[in-house]
Image 1 (cartoon, rainbow, N blue to C red):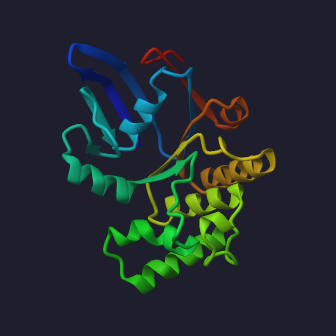
Image 2: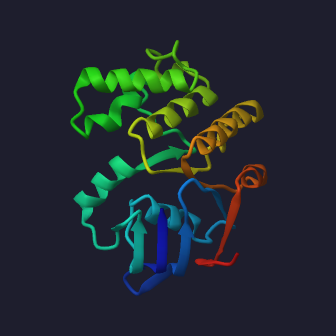
Image 3: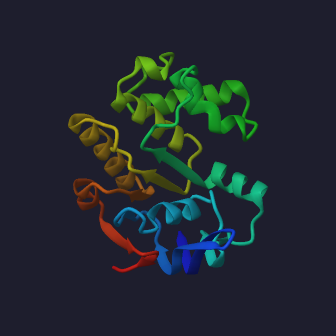
Length: 220
């Protein structure tokens, strides 16, 4: 599903240069459930941005399925993100004035999906995550756990190849965290490829494989 070879990322500003990733080699197969862990500044976020096609490596290659991402331009990366990758963020990233239904349907707007069809799919996905009775609620009217379930529904509505979750329980209480982790495990059991970036040891332990990053390299 994912293959990185010699991936490096350098950020330069004038005479200052920072090597966020240094020659990362990594493979993640279909239907793996993987945690990416490491201290702050280790390169986890940069790695996630490259995996999510939000950024490109300075050197090296990244293949998502059979597609070489490394040479794609901005428009191509946006299309790949929309069709192949579902994102779950710590801060939910929901439009506060839009309903749960509208938030979940949003990725399909960029695909040109007809309104009736995207609303039907969004409603079905909200029912799947247990929010069938909250479709017309806006994020401020939902609990943290419910907002994250809306975010999960939005990540899944486009039937992506891989879900990338960045600290998905970081803003949740213990009960909501368990709820979200159970949902991720259910998705994995259904065949989804999931990559989670986390500082939380409990979250990492529940994944089936751990990738440890330090100083821009994969150390284990």
